[in-house]
Image (tube, rainbow, N blue to C red; front, side, top):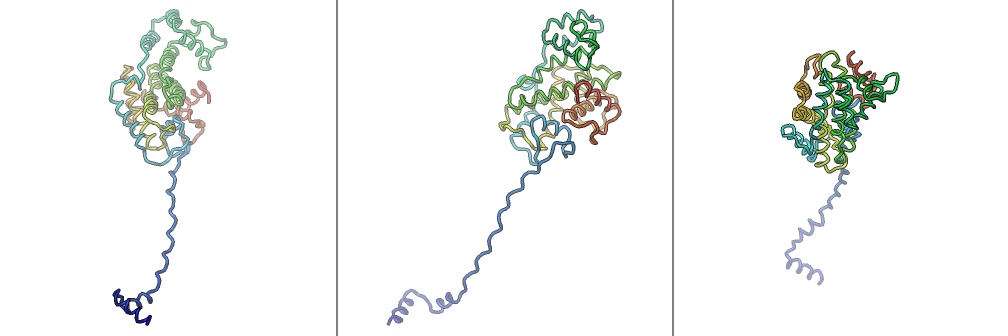
Length: 341
């Protein structure tokens, strides 16, 4: 009776006997194999800043300047691209005193005075004595290893005599331009400004040394002093526009930063009304001309910039990457003598 009722229920529900048998005969599906574990993306490849680095010298210098210990082989972030875009605009824009400081008003007058052939020692001493900062720097420099005599110099006139016209001209440039480099505005300016100024002093001294007997040493010194002036603007743009505490670590960023700040340095020198020879040398360096004229100011500027950066990075004098010419070796030793190893 139960079987009769069950058959009636199947007929009522429309279940065919053969369908039930087919389901009963269908084997269970085998379980799916486990999915392979998801592998994490490999971390960006880190590149050293040492002498064996794949990076160029200028990129290594700017990375070290900004406190980057290792750069990672990754694309330039959008925030870093905006910094480069703003710097690129500055290379064509009027002087922005908020980003590129104006030249101190007293500098042209003092430079002109120091370069006059008929300017006497008492006249120079009288003008220097009216500026306490300049007075102290003259005495300090006269007693430095670069000019040290057999006795300590304490008289302003003795210091002026010892330094000579070239030394005084260079001194005026240093005293006037020093505050331009050391004005700290934010995180990046505070941490990098001192090192940027130290490199500028070495580059200026080396450029003047390489130009001995070949032209105006003052122009060579001035060119070396402002060879990386564009980096001052870069530090201030980073202070204002880049919100991260750590500087960009992309190799592409640092390569592009060198290119745009080199052009900006030439633009700043032009806006500051520097001598045409100085502007021309900075422009040639920024253009990366393959064959710069031998013995030219541009060649001395490129060599001095390279040597000063290598010394700032701590490269030993016998490093294989140097491959110095005889003139460059003499300049290297002069920089070590004047500033220490």
